[in-house]
Amino acid sequence: MAITDGAAGNERQALSLALAMRVSPRVLRIALRAPWRWIGPGFTRGARLSILRWQWQTLSAPWPALAIGCGRHAAVITRALREASGGATYAVQILDPRVDPAHFDLVVAPRHDGLEGDNVIQTIGSLNPVDDTWLADAKVEFSTLQQLPQPRTALLVGGRRHGLNVDDAWFGALLARLEQWRERDGGSMLVTTSRRTPPEWRERLRSALKNGTTCFWGGDADGANPYPGYLAVADRIVVTPDSVNMLSEACATGAPVFTSLPANPPAKLAALHAELIDQGWLHDIHAEFSPAHQPPPLREMAAVASKVWHRIEATRPDVTVALEAT
Image 1 (tube, one colour):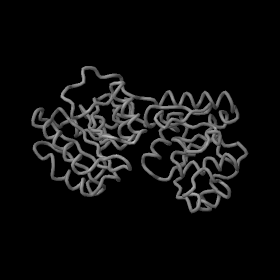
Image 2: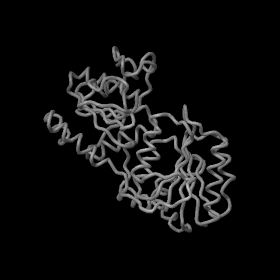
Image 3: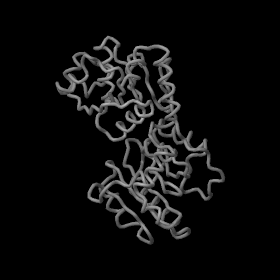
Image 4: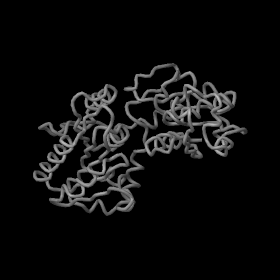
């Protein structure tokens, strides 16, 4: 069972882990009622009432052998499910639940969250499905992108984030830098936005970067989101600094990744950027140099799935048997 609040980034992480473990999960998208949505996983009394009745019934006996939750709201249900089942359900929580990790069987959290414990698996970035097979499939699905002139620069645009000074001036400087690249190198621009992209940024992007070949996706009205294809064919990738998911996925492709981090960012986000830069995966778009060496892609999924399986096999053989039977 994969449990999320329906946010694309959270669901992607939960499904990525399940599929890497070679299990086929049911997906449960929840919308917590008050007061659980305010308090989070620190309060699970009566949690069966926090979601729709039929949703809790799908979780009840016979209890699912494995529940993978991602995000703070999902953590309410993964913790409550572990408690209600008497431990029959093995509860894996992705991202820091902001309560004692002991309330779950395992917690998978990025290192910049600073969460530690005997049952905590740390990652550098977010979990994602990007590997050679995923990229090859995306190239086939979006094969026409390979006909675009090189270098192909993918621009992945997120949005504003609390404590991160990505204002209109910052955005204008980013676009100006991309125009400099286009004047110098030619090639193609492959632009995609996200649900969090401010409408004014989206409209500005529609009219910007027109000097040459530009592909733009700003929402469902523009057809299928070519985001996987962009990652697959890009010679370099530019990512706004707000999204841990997009940064992690871009760094998993093997292409050089660039961003522009404003001054005084939130500490956790700064720590992630510093580690990605230190390891050679991420570069400052405004720096006057080209990466001399590109490290192997940042791909943590297989190692995390192996660690989860190892923990289950070592401590819960009954869960191992149940999962292998599915």
